[in-house]
Length: 352
Ligand code: NAD
Image (cartoon, rainbow, N blue to C red; front, side, top):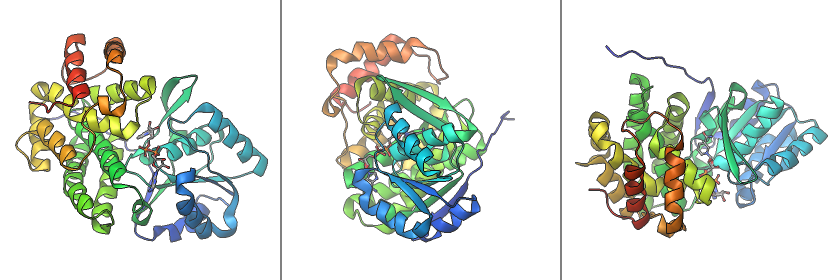
C-alpha cells in the first residue's frame, strides 16, 4: 500500500475559448471594483481585449512585467497600486506577468485573476521567484496563489511556434519530475501522465498549423495539469539545474527546460525505471529520455545549452551550484554525474 499526504491548492479555474468575457463577473466574485491590470509590451493587444472585457472596472494599468520578477519592477507597480487604491489584480501574460501579480499579492493580500498566455503553469502554484541584485530567491505562501485562473485559448494563438514548443516542454518537465517525486500519489500521477500525452499529441499538430485551436486547447489543459503537479509535489534535479542556469547565467527559462529535460531524465532513469516506462507509454515511444529529445529536435526546438548562449567555461560553476545543497532526487547527485549531464546538454548530444 502506498502511503501519501496530498495537499491541494484551492483555486477557481475557468477554461475555454472566449472566456475573457467572464472576467468582469470573476472580479465581482472576489469583491473587486477597482482593478490594476498587469501586462507586458508584447501583449498590448491581449491587454486591450482584457481592458475592454473589464470596462469601467479598470482603475490603472501597468505593462512593465519582466522575466524573473525583478524587485525594482515590483516596487514601481506597488507604488501605482497604492496611488490608485486598486482592490483586485488582473494579469494577462506568461509566467513573468503572473510572477508580478504574485509579488504584488504577497505584499498587499489583494485577490488575483490570472489570464495565462503561455504554458508555464505558474498561475496554479503558490510559488514565487524574485530577483534582486542578481540573485533569485524563491518562496511559497498561500497569499501568492492566485484565487482565479481564466484560461482562454484565444490568448495563446499569438504565441510564436518556437515559444510554444519550449513553453510546452517546460510544462512537460513539471509532469515528468512529478512522476518520480517522493511526494507523488495517484492523483498527481494521473495529472502528470495526462499532461505528457496531451503535450506529445499537441506539439506536432501545432508545428503543422500554429493556429490549430484544438491543439492549443490540449496544450493549455496540459499546462494547467502540469502546473498543478508543480504546485502539489516537490521537484528534483531538472528544476534545480534550470533554476541555477536561469538565475546565475541569464539563460531563457523555457528554452533551458527544453534543452535540459532529456538529460536530467537520462540521469535519473536508472533510479526511476517505473516512471520512465510510464512516460514512454504516454509519449508513445520506446525510450523516454530519447523520445523527449527526438520530439524537441523534430519540432526545431533548442537541443544544446551552447545554442542558448551558455559559456562552456561556466559549466563547473553550474555543477557546483547544483550539488551544493541536498534535495530529494531519485538518483544520488554526484559532481561527476552532473558534470557529465551538463556536458551532454551543452553539446546537444542525444541521450543514449
Ligand atoms: P514569459 O512570461 O517571460 O514570456 C516570454 C515572452 O513571450 C515575453 O516576451 C512575453 O511577453 C511573450 N508572450 C507571452 N505570451 C505571449 C503570447 N500569447 N503571444 C505573444 N507573446 C507572448 O515566459 P514564461 O516562460 O511563460 O515564464 C517564465 C517566468 O515564469 C520565469 O520567470 C519563471 O521563473 C516563471 N515561472 C514560475 C513558476 C512558478 O510556479 N513560480 C512556474 C513556471 C514559470
